Image (cartoon, rainbow, N blue to C red; front, top):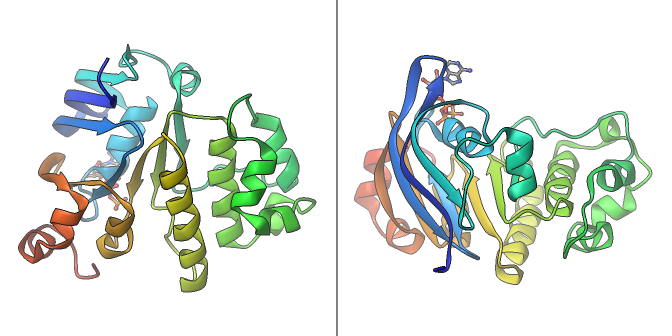
Length: 235
Ligand SMILES: Nc1ncnc2c1ncn2[C@@H]1O[C@H](COP(=O)(O)OP(=O)(O)OP(=O)(O)O)[C@@H](O)[C@H]1O
């Protein structure tokens, strides 16, 4: 087996009969991070949700770590190693931080203690309920929950959205630590390309459900033309 962690081939998907993704082929190496970029409505969330098994499959394949997961239901994909942090941060608001983590933790490298090392704020708030946390803390908890499930591939849908700049810096540092320390794969949806590209190895830009740019993150960061042609004002 090569070092490939994720491979999609001509992946087509949508909602019922409505087609959104029209043929996405991408490869993500083990330990690599992919920035998933594109304007509003380009299909970014649909792609990540399709990897998590939440859309209607229209064609093509998804292979994770050598296993064809195309036809698996979402819970089976989670068991196969897909970790998913949706935009709405799915934490249990009526449970404490600690309960949120222990309720889902699975044996592996990422323990609750290790998640606390990554996010010391969560340790300080371990007895607080989910609904008593700030937006940034909720995002940290959502990421920590996904990590203690010990996924092979972590999918993050706009993790920085709506957060104060100081929290964004804290989260970016934590994400960088995950990327550098683990052989985990990560796909991060982000509107602000310049925030996320320095963290990433590869980048893909979607437009109307198609990949209009695929290459290295560094290459895109240096490519003013591609950035301004395909992405919205804030970069
Ligand atoms: N539940 C749904 N049912 C039908 N169509 C949907 C649904 N969710 C999204 N779409 C459509 O799919 C297309 C892609 O949307 P998607 O949310 O994937 O884009 P996006 O790139 O994530 O945008 P944003 O940055 O605004 O979140 C849009 O045309 C959208 O209207």
